[in-house]
Structure formats: structure tokens, C-alpha cells
Image (cartoon, rainbow over all chains, first blue to last red; front, side, top):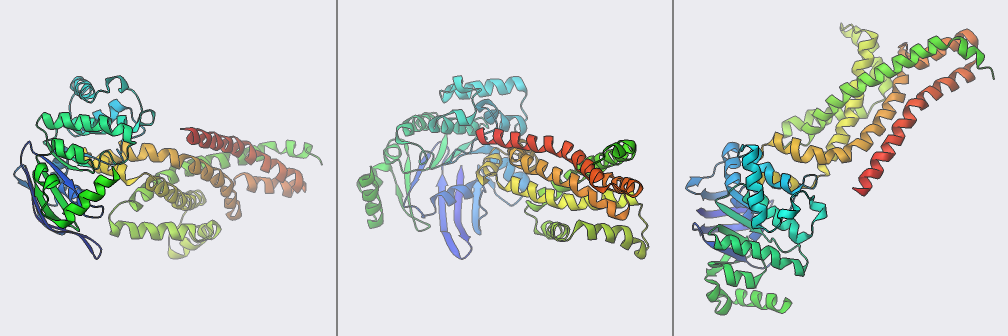
Length: 243
Length: 215
């Protein structure tokens, strides 16, 4: 579904990603972990071209990405993205946040959109917040609406960029539950997260990134109980101490 | 003080008042269009578009509008371009005010976080959909108070056109003074008439800013 080969990305003189290759199968849930500054978010943002890559190749669902604006827009419509800071549109209700993509990008009729919105709000458990503005919602609710907004595009894959890092601890659970349900439904997912329990439970594969490189990867079982690399061990120790 | 004499020449002052309102209203419309376009272009990613816009904005903000008016009205005919007084005033105030409005618009657009742009892109919106549905509606709340503040300045700045003989309110006031020799009363009247328009506008700006603070 997602094929990254030899991705190189630098900001100015600093190289953030060194020849990173990663392949995600349809329906697979891949969790990327690693210390901050490892390039996890940048890698995720390269997948839907929020960042231009310096070299390498990205193939999404069999289609090789170019710099063509139309193609990039089409790709973005097919790959959902959830941000750490939610990035909901504050001047629009939950309904309109969700309906925007289907209306303008998918060009759906109104009746169809009302159904899409209701179905998805039900899925994330926020049907009663349909007419609320983002400012009237808690962080956890906002992030669930943001997930709903991405899902409304009926994406082939979802990217999560530290979706719970900006949340108060007691609100993390509700967002992870929605993500868990998504994974169960067979959604292809790539998540950057520090939620190790979630990674362990939901991931098919865990990728450890350090200094712009993939250090090691494997099943959650292997990575969490029997990591090969010393850097992975020390990273996991530091995370576990924090929790 | 003798305001009776002002009352006698009221039709001249009123005529000037109407011309002032007219040229202000017209330049508000034209310069808002110019400023909006220039401001939008200034936030675009195309470097070759940005440089000429920067030059335009800096030149018109960096020189006195009086000199701009002199150059267009008295200077252009020497280059073989004849321009009527009205057109000169309209052109100069449109470009002058457009330069300021471009900066107000640019600042408003740039105040919207990049996350909003990225979120709009990830749901596949085009640049123009993103601008119309996401960025501008939010930026407008930032733009409107300084924009109306600028309109107040522009209203008063049009008095400068009296210097080249444009028959707006100050020019007509000077006519009345020439006939009556009562500068204090006439200027006070003229000032009061400016105040009558600008004060409600400035109250409106206050109201918008209060509303923004709560929202």
C-alpha cells in the first residue's frame, strides 16, 4: 500500500532522513517510535507530501508520486492525516469540519454528505456534538473530530502524527479507543506515538527510528521484550521510567 | 465667533463634504481590491511574483502621498500622459491606500497557523478552496479592525487632494475663507464634519475588537 524507498530529506544543511525505506502492507498497522528529533514526524509528513523529499521514491497504492499538483491532491484525498495539534477549523462546526472534504474534494451531494457525517460521528462517539465548534470541545473530543474529518474522505490509509501528545492524560484513552477500532476494521495505519501500551496491543510491526535512520523493526513482541539494539533498549527504558 | 457666516456658505461646504465622502468611498472600494490582491500575492510561494509587489508596497508606503499626487498630476503630463484631476486623485489614493491594505491583508493571512493550511491540504482542497473556506474567513477577523482603522485615516488623508485644487471639503472651506475671512469657524466646521464620519467608524472598530477579544 505504501512503499518508501531510499528517502532522503534535509532542512538546510541538516539531514533529517538518511535513505529511509519502509513498506506498509494493506491493512497493516505500523507504529513508529523513537526519541524526539529522530525524523519520525518528518517521515510521516513526506508520505503525503507535506514535505518535499530530496531524493528517493514514494509509491502509494501502486502509483509513484511525482511533483504534479493534481496527483498530490488526489493522493492527499486518499491518505488521511491526523495531527498532534488537531488542526480543526475553528470557525466551522464539527459537522462542517467533517463535510468539507467530501463536499469539495469528493464532490458528494448534500444528502450523501449528511449520511457520511452522521455515520462517522457515530463511529467516533460524538454524534451529539455535531453542531459544536472546536472551541466548545475538549482536546480528546477535538482529536476524535479530527480523525472523523480524515475518515470522511474514505481514505485507503491513515497517518497519525503523535495524535495523543497534546492531550491531558485522562483524555488519551478515548482517542486511542477510536484508533483501536479503526485498526480492528482493517484500516492501513502508520502511527508515530509514544503510547507504548497502544503500540504493543495494536501494532503489527514496530519501527524504531534514531537519528534519521530505521534502527530496527519487528513485531511488538520482539521490539519490547527482546530488542536487538542498545539504543532501542535505552530508549524504551527512558520511556518506561517516564510512565 | 460667528458661525452665521458659515451657515450662509453652507452649500459650498456641503458640496465639498459630498465630494470628500465620494472620493473616500470610491478609493476604499478600489484600494481594498488592489490591497487584497497584492496582499494575497505577497503570501504566495512564487518568488517572482513577490518582488514586484514588495517594490510597489514599499514605494507607496515610503513616500509622501503629496509627492505621489504631484508626480502623477503635474509630472505625468511632462511625459506626454495627460490625466484629469479626478483620475489623478483616484489613481494615487487607490495605489497609496492599496499598499497599506496589502500589508494589513498579508499580516492577517500570516497570522493563521500553518496547521490550518496543512489540514486543508490533507483533505485535498485546492489553493483557492483553502483560501476561501479556511484561511480568509479566519484572517478576516484579524484584518477587519486595522482595515477600518485605515479607512478612517484614508478619509482624512483625502484632504491632501485640496493642494492640487481638487474641490473636496478642505478646498471648499478655503474658498469660503477667502470670501469671508473667518478661518477659525470654517476650519472648525470642516473638522467637525470629518469627525462626524470618522467617530462612528472608530466606535465600530472598537466594537469589532471587543468582539474578537471574546471570541
